[in-house]
Length: 391
Image (cartoon, rainbow, N blue to C red; front, side, top):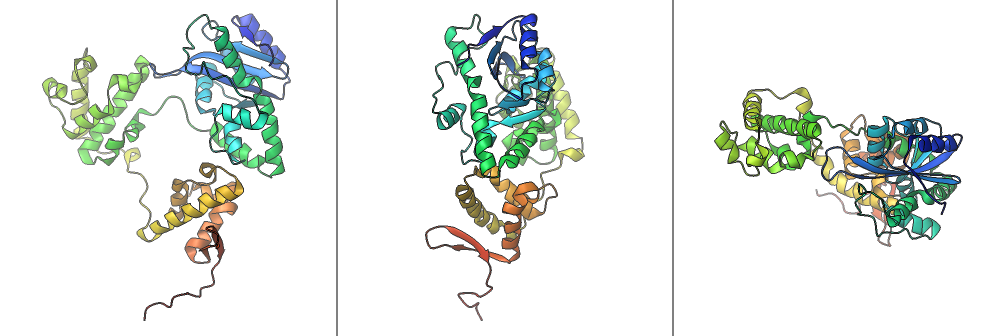
C-alpha cells in the first residue's frame, strides 16, 4: 500500500491537488458522524490516485478547494457513495462530475449490495482491516490504527475499479453501470423539504383530514428546527409525539404535555406556544396540492400479475447475475403496470430486457410456464388451454 500522507495545511492540500491534475481517475472515501447532528460532520477525507494517497483532515483545513478535483474530468471512484456525495456537496458545494460507484457496478456482476471488504476480497483476494470501523473519527490525534484503516478504504479501490470495468465490458454491461451511476449522482440529497417530512413517518401516512394536515405541519416544523439547531430530528421531537398531536390536537400547554413522547425537555422556551399555534392553523388549512396521497393503487385485476412477474424477475436476475434491486423492484413493476410516464422499466436497457416482456405477459401475448426443473420460462402463448373453460 502507498504510504499515506496526512494533509493538515492549505499548502499541503494545494500540493495534493497539483499532483492529481491530469489523473484519469481517483478513489475517494469519507469518514463522518451524524448520530448527534442533522448534517453529517465530516472527520476525514481519503483520496488515492496512481502513485499517491492522502488523508485530509477537515478539522484543520477547509475542504472547499476539493471542488477543483470534483469538477475536473477525472472519474471519481467511490463505494456506496450516496452519503459521501452528501458530505462533498455540503463541504465543497460540488460532487464528482463523473462518478463510478463500485457497489453499483458490482451489482451488474451478480453481487447484491456488497460491502467494500467483500468486494476487495472477491476481486483482489485482500482482507481489509475492520477494527476501527466504529471508531470516533472526530477524536484527535488520530491513531496509527485509524490512519491505516482509513487509508485501506481507498488504497486498492482503483484496482477494483479497473477489474470491474474489464468484467462489465466483457459482458456488455459497462454502459448499464455508468447510466446507473449517473442516476445516483443526480439523486436529490442534502437539505430535505420540510413539507415532505411527514411522509417518512409511517403512522402519519395513514392519517386523513385535519389529522394529516396537523401531522404535516408539525413534521415540517420539526424538520426546520432540527436543521436550524443541527440536531437529529428525533432529538427535537419523536415520531410518536407527532402522531399523538395529530390524533388528539391539544389546545393548551397542559394538554400538549400529556401527549405521549413529549415532556418539558422538548417544550422549553416558547415551543409550546409555537406548536399550539401550528396545530390551530393546520386544523383549518386545506391540504396543499403537493400533499396529495401517493398515486392510485394498481387496478385490482393486475395485482396478481405483480407477484407472478416478481417471481420471474427474481429468476431472471439470478440467471443474468444482476442484483435484483438493479434489475427491477416491486415498485418498478407496479409503476410499469400502472402506466406511469416515468416508469423505470419503460426506459433504457431495462425496457427491452424486462419492460417489454412484462407488457407481453400482461397483454396475453406471452405466458410463464415451469421449465421442468423448477425454473420459470417466459414463452410465446399458445392460446390453447390445457383445461377447457367451464360451459
